[in-house]
Amino acid sequence: MAGLSKRNLLYNKVSDSLSRRHVKALRATLVKDGHLGAAKVEKATPHEMFNMLEADAKLPVGDLSLLSSFLRARKKFDLVEEVENLAREERESLGGRGTKRGSNTTGSSKRTKGGYYATDGGSSRDGRHQSTQQPARGSAGHTGGRQTGRSGTATASTASSKKGA
Figure 1 (cartoon, rainbow, N blue to C red):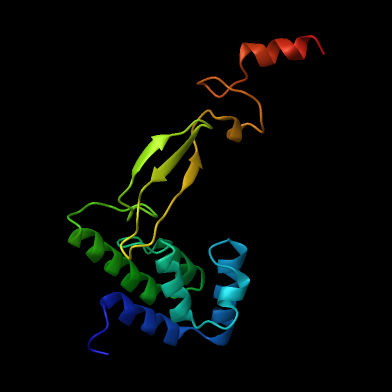
Figure 2: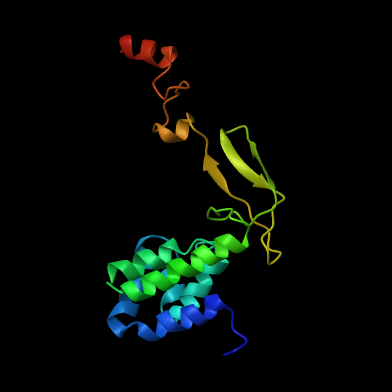
């Protein structure tokens, strides 16, 4: 075990401390919250699930908040402290920069025609291509299809069409 990273040693410790009931709750939480698919977690050990979350950028370097919140809900406060300490160490080793989920991409972001921000040409640390899209502020995606202005309220053309109805 001497060759394992601090993160993997922590994953082992957390895995060993979870009861069957806690492992079942972990699977249910990850599936219910949309972090992993049911088929992926069905027979996976907790350590394998943590590795899957890491691969999917849900447990990025310096941000183990998903794991700490799960442990906090299970009243495993000693492990919460260890998880948060490791996350702090990781952030400090990055030069004090905090990380956001999925921030390990190297592509550039731009606004696209549909009002979305897209990462183009980015790749993760392991060489896989990643592409993400998120609705831009004030786009139609935030208002159920209505066109909005900068303030998020309906534009004059939308308001006038309601008067005629």
